[in-house]
Amino acid sequence: MEVSRAQSDGTWQVIHRTEVIKNDLSPEWRPFTLPIHSLFGSQRDRPIKIDVFDWDGDGSHDLIGGFTCTFEEICKAMNSETSWPCINEKKKAKKSSYKDSGKVILHSLKIQREYSFLDYLFGGLQINLTFGVDFTASNGSPGAPSSLHFIDYQHPNEYMQAISAVGNVLQDYDADKMFPALGFGAKIPPHMVESFEFALNFNASNPFCPGVQGVLNAYVNCVTNIQLWGPTNVAPIINHVARFAQSAQGWETQGRGASTYYILLLLTDGVLSDMDNVRDALVHASGLPMSLIIVGVGQADFKDMNILDGDDGVLKSTRGQPVYRDIVQFVPFRDFKHRSPAELASHVLAEIPKQVTGYFRMRGLPPNQLPAAAPPPQ
Image (cartoon, rainbow, N blue to C red):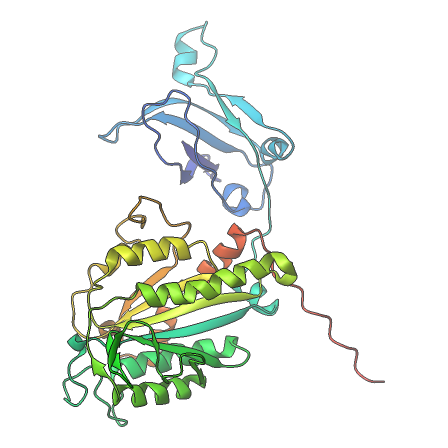
């Protein structure tokens, strides 16, 4: 099914196509959302056109029929379902007995305000940023200048640059500026046991670091006290943050509304070893107030990351369940190695506003209202 808007020159512009439903004479399409402005512009009396096609694999779809309607007419579906006869004008012209090719039923319609990312921030939304750092052996021995974890304060490595660039932007949205910083894929003290979910400050009960500089300090100290290992398993850290996001979701229905959103910034140098577990973790997390930003450091082949951020189609769990919404953004650091930190941060965070507003829209949560400021003293 296609939805088209009327142009000023009398033509029609397609603005939405539904999914294809095969082998069904009574198809029922999934609900979809469209901005009112894209349908009618500034003229609510302007008609829109709905056309239904019989899908063909070669692209030569056959028109079953269609109709035009107005904003006022479709608004009737806000109270009860509304229907229109689906007319094929060519068949109507050929046969006097032709009535219609069926009917299209609009079961329900909801009109709601679209809130912006800034609306939620002004409503007191807190962005909680967590860092996840890859300490697998493929990064190279930290003592070697060729290592991705080589520490040189005059020339910060890619991990340090990414932490600074993204953290310095997001810390302004975090009231206490205390960031959990986690590592994975290393053997850690005191017993040098392999771990895929450890605090960079080695304080499991309090992994928070004061500001971005605190994260960098913990990172540098961590590099000198661990043994790089492997494999590159990241699902434990994703699930770690998801547990906090799950708790925040519970608060939404207890009067706190749109108050908290989590972002995991995951820095890794290579292909993930636990892709199936990651897919399952992300499908679960897609229903929570959470996003995942993956920054790929080094020169590895990151093509598998396209699976996670939806570039190769909708991400599904190992059981075939699709994500509720897209929550993953992948950025290869090498594309920004010779550009400013601001450019990296801008690109890395480009999808966050849409992901945040998409989540709260899915949950039906408007921005919270901040208490009115007290009047100035007289």
